[in-house]
Amino acid sequence: MEDCTVPLETMTYSESLRLSEERKKMVAEQIVSRGVKDPLVLAAMRIVPRHEFVPAEVKESAYRDAPLPIGREQTISQPYIVALMTEALKLEGGEKVLEIGTGSGYQAAVLGEIAGSVHTVEFSEEIARDAAERLARLGYHDVVVHCGNGFEGWPAEAPYDAIVVTAAPESVPTALLNQLAPGGRLVIPVGKRSQMLQQWVREGERGFESRNLIPVQFVPMIGGPPKSTPQPAA
Ligand code: SAH
Image 1 (cartoon, rainbow, N blue to C red):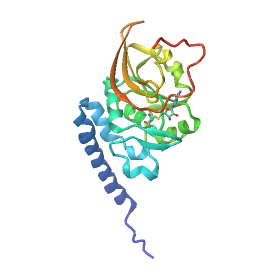
Image 2 (cartoon, protein in one colour):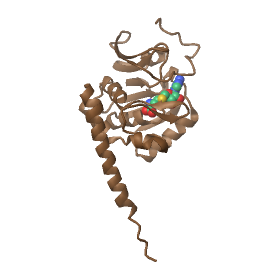
Image 3 (cartoon, rainbow, N blue to C red):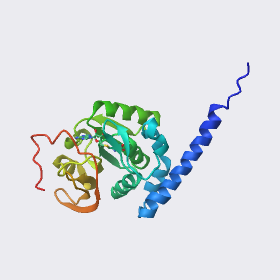
Image 4 (tube, rainbow, N blue to C red):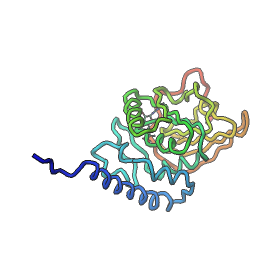
């Protein structure tokens, strides 16, 4: 008997068009409207298929103006926060970037659209494996997922032009500051109950400039700093 179902590709194409329209709307209504201007960031946010990074049961909400649960008590950040943090990294294309807290891999994919190479460190082995599989399936071959404790950064690939942290430590881990290249930027939520998104810039060998961006709410960074690394005073 003839198979009379609609060809899969036709359905997939119209569905992907619909989702691409949703992304354009997300960028206009949630991100540009709140003041994010960097064209590289806006382009990346229009391209990365956010619906591929959330569990099936929340797929229909993938482009909503909200963080979403991604399982194992973790969340994928609100699109605006991802855009704001990426803009604060001041990327121009081609940089080496480190992310701490891979989660779904969404922020890493956004970075992958802009930077030359991305290393992302995830504490949980299971989460790291899932994210690595997802990023490879979606073609993000310049994003490398590592399993480790982000309090230590990822020294093997240092220095980095930019570092973004997507779980909140109580104070800025020294290792991350040390792994910034001169002129490099670190964007990080800091605090326990009330957290502040901070941007740190390495001015030279030793000097750092820091400023507060906005209050945020991230899951806490777990695992704690390595015993041998002294923490800076708050
Ligand atoms: N950037 C992610 C969301 C991060 S959720 C995304 O785009 O989906 C925070 C993640 O940080 C969780 O996956 C959690 O397991 C991880 N995490 C918490 N403490 C960590 C640590 N010390 N080192 C590395 N990852 C950590």
